[in-house]
Image 1 (cartoon, rainbow, N blue to C red):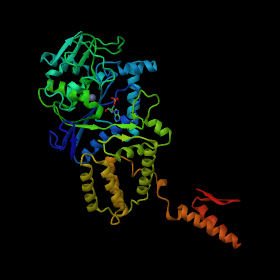
Image 2 (image 1 turned 90 degrees about the vertical axis):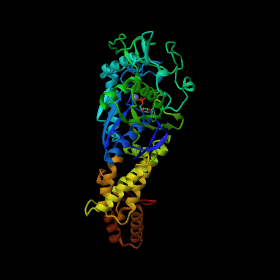
Image 3 (image 1 turned 60 degrees about the vertical axis):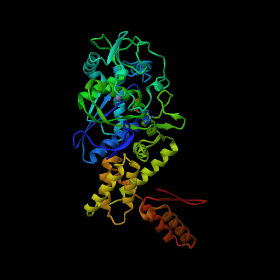
Image 4 (image 1 turned 60 degrees about the horizontal axis):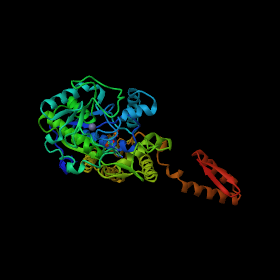
Length: 467
Ligand code: AMP
Ligand code: ZN
């Protein structure tokens, strides 16, 4: 597979550290609110990446954190704790909020056929690992204590800007919601590893540490959880593009300072889904959730197809009109597949040919749109029988996860003698029979339609029908 690597800014051949095995880490949700469909775009495309790697024959181990402490409202170290903010909003405890929104997140994922990662680890369950890494960073001079907090010294990091490609000097202002500066920092890009003091005093969750009662910063969580479960060398790290800086930049700095060598080879980032007004945000009142789409009658699979139709590295604009197009395409595709008979021989040679074409297409930097084109071309291939087509659809659906062969039979394409044109033709024939006073023929036509579940109603303006 070829994959764009944010670290090198080129499309590269993907080669894991250990032949045939992939260690994959995904930044999980901060569980203070529902996920919006933009967040879900990122998880969905990461799911497709994971499934494609498995399809291509790799054994994948995927780990995801759940951020239930330490993520402040700005991605830097200022603002309120997002979890506390959620708890206050709902008059609940932080743990109640975390539990509720973690379940809601995985519920959304399962409706979108996003596979649950092999290991899901809430940050609050790994405090010992974070403390161990922070202690080592202090010992080796990569971290310092100022006014009770432990900071990472970014001036000590080797090539701090490699991932972001930015000049840190330029990034020091402007990227954060809240640019108020922390006078304890030696360099503006330094970040907190461990808080014992923050602007707010009512942090609910605190742990004993060598530096006092406190809680971890957000960035150390992902390094710690990844190293704990996947070891010292990671193949792919994923997230949305907003994670590149400061989150992933800081993860690299501290992980490599701790490990003493390169940590992760490939960085995979999904571009944002935007609404028509611009950025999608949870602070904009009613925001777009999967449940909202469902309450408006959309099938989650229509949203999944909507995402698959475009490339993960291109920004995608959400509108109901765009989603309607995907929903119509989904129904058409599902009906087409439901109309394929499972009876008959499967052409193994054709299956192999199409598998190769599919790997070729999707293997070019996860080109899912091209993969869908292979699917549509295959369905049009007159040399293939129904059973072969059905087998190929089911094979591709290991990656697409669109439930294409699982749709109920009633969604099958209407038979030729149930189409609207055919019904209108029958109605015209019946009207002609009535005019000719051939009532027996008129009644026979009515009965023929009724047998197919089509009911005729005669009105003064003519005959209408319903199914
Ligand atoms: P959060 O729960 O806010 O930490 O975000 C969860 C994931 O969604 C992260 O990987 C973000 O990078 C990603 N993300 C945030 N906003 C969007 C968006 N509008 N479109 C796509 N992904 C997003
Ligand atoms: Zn992370």
